[in-house]
Image (cartoon, rainbow, N blue to C red; front, side):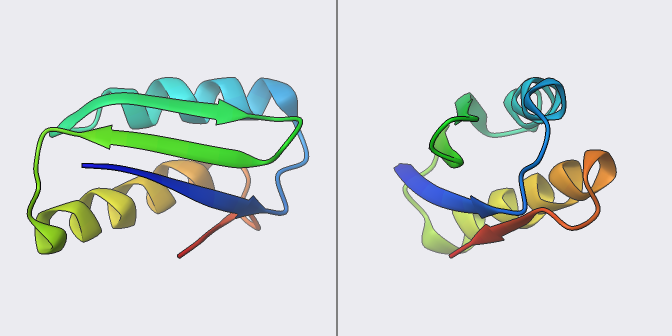
Length: 75
């Protein structure tokens, strides 16, 4: 499953790169990309299960907050 999300309050390109790397390492994520210019996150996961994908997005939110506490993944 692949989905795109808007990131709110993304203020730092370096933090975006760290978030991208951290999200890419989450279990079940085959690829994650963040565009700092458009504030978009793309997650490509190994599952088609909506509940499992929601858990991945929750974990991705924790990764984002660890670098920028005000950064929110809009669903």
